[in-house]
Image (cartoon, rainbow, N blue to C red):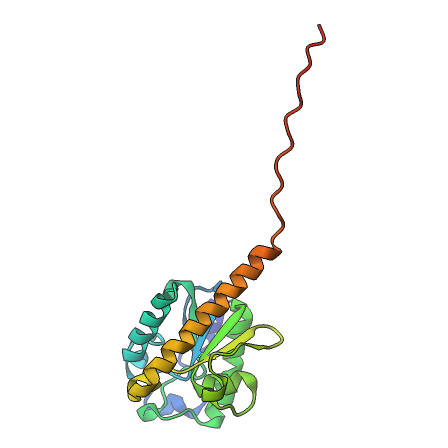
Length: 207
């Protein structure tokens, strides 16, 4: 199955109760299908539900600014959510909703094959780690999993609702930039040295 086929298979999905609780459309995900960095949020909000794209409201604008601050942009990454439909009144997704949608998130990760998955907020981190987590304790620390590295970050919406978290969120992205720089440096060191081309044979005048 391709990413496009997976998206089409979820069109007008009726697998959980969110389909009947006011969602406008399934918000699958968007971005570079070959991205080495993937961002995963919690679920669509009001504007995401209307436009069919993750992170297009105020939290999305803040995310764009944070990406730009570390030299990334939306076309460089892929972004999706744990649940693909908006929970009513932007409430937290319920366990049965997460469990219904989780296989599709894992399929997205499998198809995109990012080296780094940056989770935004508690729900995304604990969904991929399969355990409850304290995002304040885990944020900004890389966690190596079987198929990719997880990098938990605070959710931009949390910084909008609690102004005192804005500095912490910016710090998370500075740590992400430092981690990416280390990966680049390690890759450069591991790359084989480019050997000089062999010298052209000297022509000898035999006559």
